[in-house]
Length: 117
Picture 1 (tube, rainbow, N blue to C red):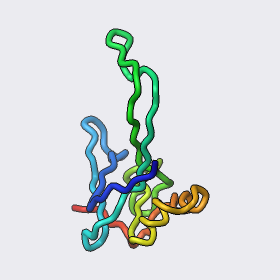
Picture 2 (cartoon, rainbow, N blue to C red):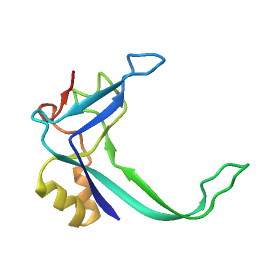
Picture 3 (cartoon, rainbow, N blue to C red):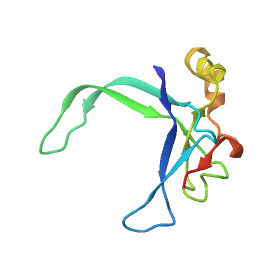
């Protein structure tokens, strides 16, 4: 199932720091609300350890990620979350056929995200 998670900021580990790693925060320029593109589904299996197994049905949840844009890349070169910035994008994510919904899996434009102090 697809879902939306409302947010006003997100963090990424700063690859330019060592232990302890510093997390840097990002937001929309005016701290506007956005949504993470999320998915969840049931899965049956073992989510425990060898010592304490946890076999059964589990609800798994994930955010979609994509390549980083120019603002996030200097901090985290591998990925950034998919940000849905308009109600049209949110509706497309929730209601469109999968191949159309997945067209949203792309970096946010550089001017859509700022690194917070």
